[in-house]
Structures are given as structure tokens and as C-alpha cells.
Amino acid sequence: MSVRVAVIPGDGVGPEVVEATLPVLRAALDRQGESLEITELDWGGERFLREGAAMPADAAEVARAHDAVLFGAVGRPDVPDDELVWGLIIGLRQQLDLAVNIRPVRAFAGVPTRVRGTDGVDLVIVRENTEGEYTGAGGLVHAGTGDDLAVEVAVHSRRVIERAAEHACRLAEQRTGRLALVTKSNAMRHGYPLWDRVVREVAERHPEVELETVLVDAMAARMIQAPRSLDVLLASNLFGDILSDLAAVLAGGMGMAPSANILPGGDVPGVYEPVHGSAPDIAGRGLANPTACLLSGALLLEDLGHDKAADLVREAVATTLADPHHHTPDLGGRASTTDLAAAVLRQVTDQMETR
Ligand code: ATP
Image (tube, helix red, strand yellow):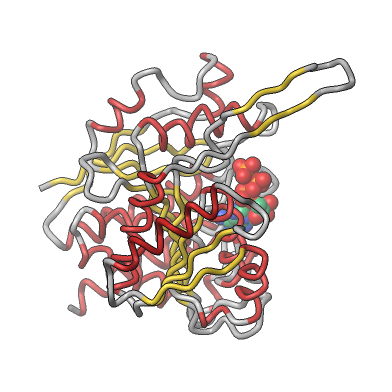
């Protein structure tokens, strides 16, 4: 059988990290008697400059013709950020109704971090992915008069909170049972109190789940001071976005954090992507750490039921990162993107031979 993946390398470091990842996924699948079938898509900033749109009008259909989508990054300095973010990744998440963004963060032995006490960190952020502050609802009035007034409306609906909470509870059940809901219900009087109520109701249907509610500001401090006290976090679109960059730092930086955009139980392909963006400051120089993309690939394999192949990739990444010779500059090393990727590929091949 073959796994059909639509690949969007995108902009900046996107193509570099995706190119580093594909051979590893192919090798891991190969050992399970599976093959990887790729459709490369030119969606992103260059397409926007050429054709006026970062992706085609039938993008969701194209994605649906595949088992999954692997996405590098989008963003380039000569195109307004919102054109590309809305025109591609947020657009795709909304068109496919990808309810949650799963962002696991794990400390790897041998990888230095700027935060003390992160050894053993192993948490997952479940970020609501379709509403909150990122629906685009709102508008600008009196534009250009000097009295410009912008309204940005946050949208929180019971149905959407409920499905994110249901997934977070199931994930917590598979892990330690601990779930922390992140809100700001002391200052925001409508949306987050609704989150509190709905998530409490959902958690009551999962007696093994121990729910606590933490305000987002307190959570930011706790993630730095006591990160090992956390397991599964459930957060709105905005809070999940911010906290996952913070969480990435616990694991060694932006190059380390993978993610999966999925509709749990739905018949749509997931979109798998590193949490980091296009990083134009280091693009094209072989400096990007491909770990986030490699681990996103492992999530893709796991969600498609190829658990052994996914484990193979994760073990290969862990073994490789344990040796500082393979570290890219963001981790304090001197290895290039391709050096690190080649070492991971060797590990996958070696592990396969010793099994
Ligand atoms: P975008 O607007 O596309 O999000 P950005 O540069 O504002 O791009 P990120 O791409 O998330 O935001 O990067 C923030 C910083 O983290 C970058 O400037 C870069 O130095 C670092 N970084 C991001 N990804 C990586 C990576 N894969 N390897 C090493 N460093 C990275």
C-alpha cells in the first residue's frame, strides 16, 4: 500500500526542512512494506506573487485527494504576512474544518535549552483551530482619517469548544489523565466563561480526567517555572498559538516543535507542519533545524496508523540528537540541515537493520 501525501514546501526554510524530512519518512515506511507517494504543490509566497493567490480555489479538493498534507512554512518579506497566512494555512485549516492543532513538546536528551528543569518535559498543547480570535470577524472604520478604529471580534461557539475538549479529554486519558484548560475568564466575561462551562461538562463525561483551569498569564509563568507539572493543555486559538512558541523553547527552540492540524473522527486529511514559520533570517543557508518537520512527519505517520514507522522516526531523531555533533546552530552546534537529516536517515536505516 502507498501513503499519498500532498507536500507544500512553501517559503523560507520550508523547502529545506521538507526536503530533509521526505527521505526519512520514505525509509521508515519502506521497512513496513509501504511506499510514499508524493504530490508536490507550489503553494505559497512565490505563487502569490505570480498568480495573486497563495493556493488555488480548489485547494481543499486537492488536499482531500490525499491521505495527508505535509506543510513546510509560509511567509516572505516582500508579501504582507496576513495575505499568506490567511491565503494558505489559516484558509486551509478553515476550509478543511481542521478542528484542533496538536502540538506535542518533548525534551530530548542531549538538547540544551535556555530554561532550567525542562529535562523530562513531555506535554501536548491542544489548540482550538477554527475560531477564537482568528476568524477574521471585525472591521476597520474611519480608515485613514487619523481616527482609525479597528474591531477584532473573538468568536467562541459551544460546538467548537466541545469538540476540542472531547479530543483533549481523550488524549489526557491516554496519557496521565491530567488536563489543564487555559483561559482568561477573570477579565473576559463572555467567551472564556463559556469555555469554562463547556469544558467542565465534557470532562465530567470522562471520570478519569482530572481537570484544572489556569489563567493564561499564570500558565505562561508556570510553563517556565514548573513545566514538568503539565501534561495536556487545552487552549483557544490565540492562547494556544502563543503558548506553543513558549513551549517550543522548553524543548530547545522553534526548530524542535511539530504540529498536526486534524479533525478528530472526520474524513479529511490532516495538515502536518512545524510550529515555526518561514524564518527568513536563516533561509537558504542550510542553518534550519529540520527536527520540527521530521517530528511532524512522525505525527502524520502515526495518525495514518503507521505507528511502527512513526516510532522509528522518533527514535532515530532522539538517538541522533543525543550526539551534539549533529546539532544545528540553533542548538549551539555546527551541523547543517542536511547533516542532521542525513544522520537521522542513517539511524532509521540502522535501526531497521538491527530489528
Ligand atoms: P513567520 O513570519 O513565517 O512566522 P518568523 O521569522 O517571524 O517567520 P519563525 O519562523 O517562527 O517566525 O521564526 C522565529 C525565529 O526562530 C527565526 O528568526 C529563526 O531564527 C528561529 N527559527 C525558526 N525556525 C527555525 C528552525 N527550523 N531552525 C532554526 N531556527 C529556527
